[in-house]
Length: 134
Image (cartoon, rainbow, N blue to C red):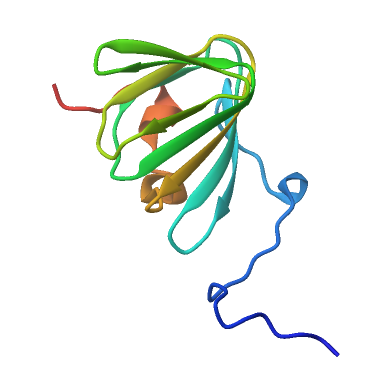
């Protein structure tokens, strides 16, 4: 007999395998896979050495965990190099940009959901240009 999920679980229980998820190529140097819940999302991002994430900001708090490789972030005029096994927490609405110092596997967690990522309106990643007003 199948057991029911406890009443405290989310409305939509998901059990996912990264290997089964579609890899979305945003540009020739950056791809991602996404796991999306009701209020937060996790992206597995692959960046080829030299890949640039242009300056941008978003409502979501971002937690970045580098599995392999290294990213150099520029935030408020300061550089932060985040390497394998390290975490960077970026508060909501803080302008940031990054460059892959080597081939990098990165997990990014966002809350609330990044609607621009879900709708394909993340043009800064797709074009390599920042769209912040100066």
